[in-house]
Amino acid sequence: MGQPLLWQFMIKKYNLLLVGIFALGLVLRLYQLGNYPALNADEAALGYNAYSLLETGKDEHGNSWPIHFQSFNDYKPGLTVYLILPFVKLFGLNIWSVRIFPMFLSSLTILAIYYLVQELFSNRRFSLLSALFLSISPWHIHFSRGAWEVSIATFFMTFGMWSFLRARSSPKLYLLSVLVFAASLYTYHSARLVTPLLGLGLLVFQYKNMLNDKAIIGLSIGLGIIVLTPLILDLMGPAGISRASGVGITADMGTVSRINEQRGEHANQDGLWTKALHNKLVNFGLVFTKNWSDHYWGEFLFNSGDEIQRNKVPEMGQMYIFDIIFILIGFAGIVKLKVKNNWKLVIWWLIVAPVASALTFQSPHALRAHNMVIPMVIISAYGFSVMMNRIHRVGLILFIVLIVLGVSRYLHLYWVHTAKAYPYSSQYGVSELVGYLSGKTGEYKKILVTDRYDQPYILFLFYSKFPPEKFQQEHVLTDRDRFGFSTVREFGNYHFERIDFEKIRGSSSDSLIVGTSKEIPSDANIVKTIAFPNGEDAFRVVEN
Figure 1 (cartoon, one colour):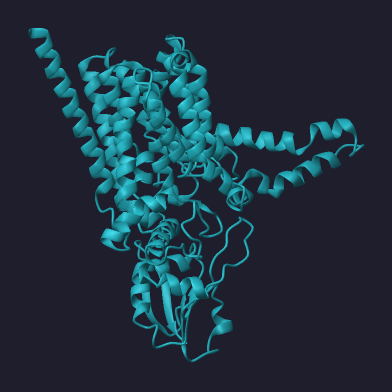
Figure 2 (cartoon, one colour):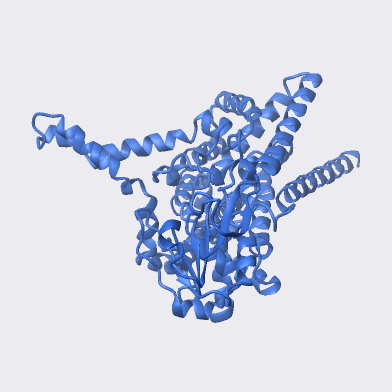
């Protein structure tokens, strides 16, 4: 009787710890979700398109219930829009209604990684540490606090891995795994490369476990074909090439120029040997290899993080400094185990995680390689678990203090310094600007607004709740820019353009001009100033 009672007590203890870890992760992601950080253009596009569907049955550009949303001509995968749609219906179009469900799904990854590690290694302490490390991960928290499609895709990948592995003892879960993996493909561009590669790893390392379940495997394949057919058909249209043409490494003409330069250094520029050494396959292959390897460098992971300010906090990498120690110990432990079968899956995930990101010219990229956080956290947690068995209690306490200090520093940097150090990282001040201008639209024939900040038109649509039916009828998308994106220059009496103040000054007595501090001089007739969180002028409003 004693042993079963002890086991029941241990199970309850582990369950309570898991609930506590999940609650911690939820609080870190939920606190001030509707206020911080400021809404960015991609989030506004997701929210406004959901609002447009509810109002008209069409997206902002008049497409009926699409699989991909045309948006800025980047054709966003549409599942996130449909997931947030009920919340926009219930709570109206606002930041909270757009972010709450993506945040919750992303938080569920904390539970998913626990069950995945438990399925792989049957070690509850290791599983709990993995959940804990993910709950406090800067990389994961950052992209959970917003309507980031990538954080939802990472949840689907993790849940899909668990359900596939769990199907070894409950074969019907193969069907669930197919549905969840398919959902990741409908959610984010990068998943369309990474998820199939994860599936390949599962087939290679788990095929022996699947031999006895041929009937359910066949049914799962059939289900996958049915579910993915609409996506495949849609990818044959503009959605299939739009993203790659804008941010793919082949869009960087510098590599092509380098090929021509290298060939020009040969006596026979058109020789077979010259072309064999210097061509697109070789040079773009080298670019991809460098981009891929850059995701594993300490500068990106532990020191300065992504170069794009919106994707990081100042003075930090994507992970904690203390993770270096645990990851090294973790890898040493894995090597000692001679990389047994289940560890092969984790290492495979680590290898393929940045593949999609490496195919773009912005690399390393924390957003596109976001799923990499899962294997990194698992290895770090394993290293800490190994260390717990090897060091004295005093040493363990010191490491726990180090972790607490690291997390405290991250939270301080995130909440106090990020918006001030990186005022352009999100569209700070736009909500206040739209609120001010909404009361002026009837007074002026035209309101000229700077396009200095990313896609201002969609934020104006979002905050003003501009009628979608009216917008669909009157707006025009511009041609694609060199990155493959389009925008809208005007709707209503708003017009968005780069402000040449001296040129337009005095051109009309019936207009407002909204520009940045670099566009509007301080001696102009400024009637309203809106500041960034660091006190600098974000917008200056001038009565013309």
